[in-house]
Structures are given as C-alpha cells and as structure tokens.
Amino acid sequence: MPTYVAFLRAVNVGGRWVKMAELRDALQNNGFRDVESYIQSGNLRLTSAMRSAARVERAVEEVLREGWKLEVPTMVRTPAELRSLGTALAGLDTPLPGQPRRYVSFFKDEPPEGAVQALHAWDREHERVRVLGREAVLWLNLPAHEAKLTNARLERLGGALATTRDVKVVDELVQRWGG
Image (cartoon, rainbow, N blue to C red; front, side, top):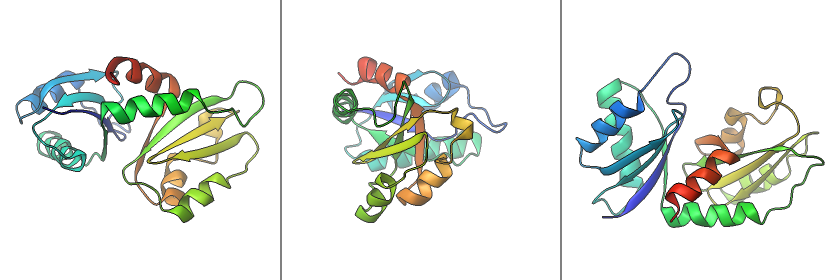
C-alpha cells in the first residue's frame, strides 16, 4: 500500500483540540494503516489502499469532520515528494542577512504562474519567499507574529490553502518519513 505524509492546517489552534492518539485511532478505524504522528500540530504518516493523494486528503478531512465536527484542510505529499523538498531546501541560498528563521508552507494546490511571480516579488524588509512547486519557503528576520507575510496573505497571494511548518520540523519529517 502507498505511504503518504499529511499536514493538517490549524488543527490544534484557537480553542479546538484534536488529540493525535485519538486521531490515529480514528484513521485506523477508517481504513488507514501504520498511522504515525509527529508533534501536536498535525503531521501524519499513513498508508492507504488509495492511489491518489487528493483522495487521501478528502478521506482524512472526512474523518476529522465526522469525528470532531471540524473542517481541517489537509495537504498530502508522498515520501518521495518530501525527500525531494528536503534536497531542495538544503540547496537554497539564504536571501536575507544573518540567520533568518525558515518556514515551509505546503499549498493544497500548485500556485498559478502569476501567483508564483507575485510571491517571488515579495520584498519587505526582513521577509522573503520562494515557491518550489506546491511549497513556499519563507525567510524571516523578525518574529513570525510581526511578519506581514502571514499564512492568510500567503494563501491570498498563492491562490490556494496552505499550512506552514518551521523548517526544523520539515527536516525532522524528511528524516523520519522521507525514506
């Protein structure tokens, strides 16, 4: 069975809470196998007989809707896509001075070319972004809560839903689940 990595958008924020152990059980009870999670922000590895990442996204979203009455957009990648992202991240030059924090935003759909150009043109002091297919890499030389390039703005500019992770989390997931 194929393996997938799922990123849940805003699953445990704003007073809503899904315990990952309960979610793992619910997914296993709905046909998924070998379900693992990493930290409470909604990073999952699972196997499924489904051959389409889009079908896996819809199925995970349905489990959350049925079990918790929550609409949680889910972005699914294969281990090979995650591994490829890790390689791309390692090869990127930092476009800001010093040691900026790096984040990866996972888009639900690939941004259209005009959106990619708009994101690449983002030129605020202390903030840069680079789109790599269905992901965007953000560099920030200021605290994330002070950035103008919020997830909401990233979604508007990118034309697709997104969820963001610190690059340290992404690096860990590449090591754990990109093999």
